[in-house]
Image (cartoon, rainbow over all chains, first blue to last red; front, side, top):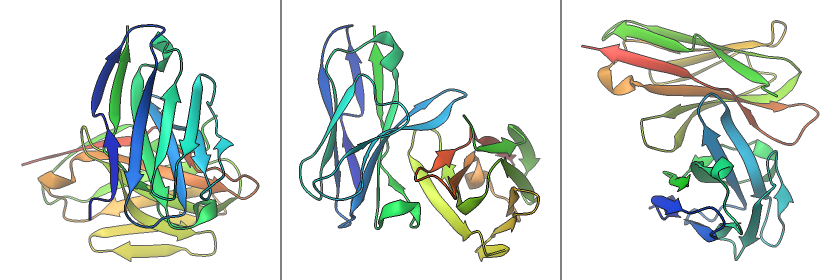
Length: 114
Length: 111
């Protein structure tokens, strides 16, 4: 099984450009998450989807939008990229809601905004 | 704000030695999870320990939880070079619905 697949792996944007980060999982998990990882900050939750058809804001949602396209796919969109959004973005999924089951992570998208 | 904080921030040991990492947190929790991250990769789940559990094992890993001290430890026995990675604790506070990650311990295992 592929697990959680993220595309692209790397991306460079100019300030103001938009892009969508794609995430798909093949484990039939109900919940999916988007995190960003910055040096010295740990992982911070951007948005999550507890189940198909629902999305909720996390700790740092400003400047992002998400779409739970179906049970497998959860995309993250930057409408107008800013240098502060330079980060490594991780998608994760879990079998159940409420963080009582382990998170499975993709290998990340490394985004640089110049 | 950080709920879980790992200690030490960095640890360097020789292959075959044991490695111990600690995690302290501030409020009561439902569960605490440990993850490993190899350089350039995503996080990999190691162990989930619930608030009513005191110790769990998985292979060479041993996790303890002391809710009275609001702390947990991860012990890796007989370490290997392949254990070189960053290790994160993540806590699920009792009154919140979000998992909060610490900033990690960087473990270097040398031959």
